Length: 92
Image (cartoon, rainbow, N blue to C red; front, side, top):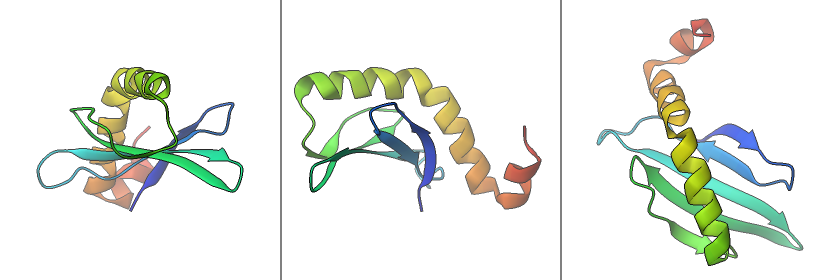
């Protein structure tokens, strides 16, 4: 399952998974385009893109910078999701 993290002004949406057994977190990015979406995925803490469709090298450089700078927040949120809804609801 993925949870929404943020949506940029151009409609690009970032979502994350709970922390996986191996300690990684899946991040998925979608950007609306005519008749569909551009799409890319990576795992944190390493930001190596896969399943990339529609994003240019410059786009991926921006996404890498954005995800890397937001990684501490995304990793914390993912860990809260793994802990369960009661913990997530109580946490600030």
